[in-house]
Amino acid sequence: MEVSYRAVHVWRRDLNVYGATWWTNAIPPIFEPILYLLAFGAGVGSLIQKPISYAGREVTYVAFIAPGLIAVTMMFWAFFETLYASFIRMYYQTTFDAIVATPLSLDDVIAGEVLWGAGKAVGA
Image (cartoon, rainbow, N blue to C red):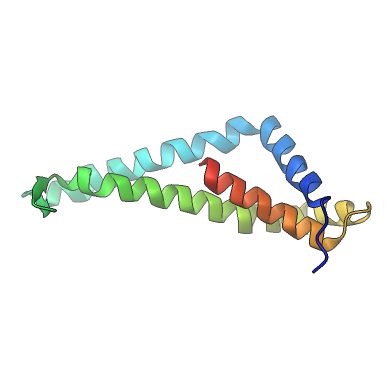
């Protein structure tokens, strides 16, 4: 695999696109854990009457599942960006074809996409 410093240009391109569409990319990850918390907390949580004993403390069901819901949401959005959004850019938008027509290689494109997915996962 021949990856060069040019992979940063793919990362920067993804950053520029994210900067232009940040509103539609930022709102779903913010509201998704809230909706899950309402569904599981109010829905399933109403079926669980007694508190859960964890680490010697009594915690409510909602307080027990909230950290996990936030963690799962962040992992899902990083996974979604890395796999599904990259597939859309590759197959439907043919962005990768346009990038490979420049001096960048396919290895640079893949490395740039991995850098972008890792950056979004850390930044989430």
